[in-house]
Length: 142
Length: 77
Length: 235
Image (cartoon, rainbow over all chains, first blue to last red):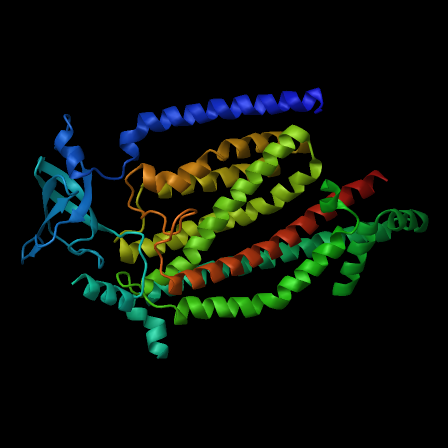
């Protein structure tokens, strides 16, 4: 059997860890909204208290065939496949920004359907493969 | 070909800087760790050599580690 | 069993292991680097910038693994009071801190061409920064608290508390929306990274693990000499 002292220290540490896990969990739960790096179009649609003067981020996929680039601005639609937000942006975009790929736009919401971005970030997925393989996959899909 | 390797389609600066950063930091850290080890070995050897002959004998007979430290120090100089 | 880690033959073992690693290290390093920089294919989307992964990901893995190691050994040490475990945790901590910094810096360099920004306060990156702070706390407690028993006690508690951060880092990309992409390599199920890129990644990981072993052995040796020197004074 373990000596009494060891048992005492073990139970002390267990209680300490249990309490701190609960504490951290509560803190994270309380901060939940702030930890999110961006909101999805659905989050915006259901949200009741939107501050239109505060900077925020919207993230999702660039909807296919909606990217429209002209001299003055870049326009596209961010979708999470349930709801959509239209985005207008002036400035440079990252290399990885493309239709059908992930995107995070930072700026101000005008209304629930229209967003003026000040900065565009590309969000890529966790798939890595050589380009030849991607081409083969594309051909197979077609 | 060498040019391709250095430029990497314009990503070269990012790729090379992260590789060079990593290995530079690793190298410096290795050097520092080694230097500290040598310093401690040296100090230890010095302290043993300052002991009287009998004490030195006792220490080296009782502790294999002490004699090992001493021998590895002697090897490096 | 524990004497195995701290018997009079320990120096012979350390020397043997160091010599063995030294003999294979440079061959491995050259193989790893040439695969990472030359032979591995570019990514279909990210192009050549994907090569940063070969230092970023192993560094991040090592930083998480070594903190878990420190925390578990610290808990063990706190409960059973095995002095020699402290030598091990103290030897691992600087390695972990260094790799946490490498992971953050290379990640930041990688973020610029892919995301379009060096830094984002998303959950993954912030929790990595907190990990670095835990490492710093652990190291500085040992440096600043002169009474060794007290230093061990406090640092053990800090490490045990920091252990909670590890699953947060791991799952941050799944629990919250982050700019950082989800994990490509999963413990269960298939990974979403092609084998021609997975192989160099694992090779680089192995190279850096060997490097860690070299540093660890040197640090561990230094700690033992320090203890022996103290004992010498008591004579």
